Image 1 (cartoon, rainbow, N blue to C red):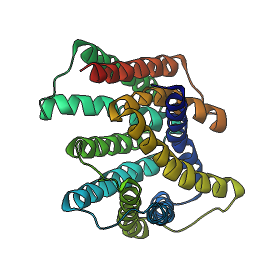
Image 2 (tube, helix red, strand yellow):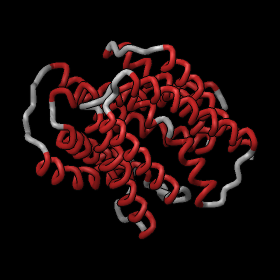
Image 3 (cartoon, rainbow, N blue to C red):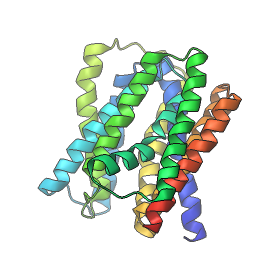
Length: 288
């Protein structure tokens, strides 16, 4: 792995982790589902325009359409929709920690449902990662964290895990940006009716809200996607996924820096354990 790939991987991790903080700012002043639907509408249109500029086609195969629809619903509508709703009740750092357990859940699900073999290092990583989550959750629940919000985040990460496992070997066929754009538009198509049905379109407009919305639309929404696919193309998906071990630490660090969220000793200890667990799982996959 060369220095350029390392820097791009770290940039991706920062962009991905910062999305929870910007989302927390957005849902404080705007209805979460409608805000997310608008974000996906804008991001999706921009991604399709970029894809066409890159010469990519929206004439997908049946397998590609299946992958696009499943991920559009499970990742964009369910995973992110539930997280946006949850962050009206819980802190961004806690949402980031729960979401960071996705690589661990994929490892367990692959072992239980797909018969994938796990090395001793991978098993140690899984156990350590989930122990870290338990440590943080116990401390947050004792401090009065909202159970409903936590439940929404858990349902969201389970949805993303199921989609990831179901489409583990799906390919974009070279139309990666087009597929991403169409996924976003599918997510917006699901979220708009839900938002209009469940929410009141009341917005407290401020420069903070506008900045957070523009940031989450362009940076985690588009830039992170471009960097991720560049990284996968350069070093492969398994090695690229190693950078996910940075997400727990970065998620809580960014939330503490920008939102002044308080972090206790249990939070920091749990984050370190989760990060090391994810790293162990990813290293075991590379070795295999």
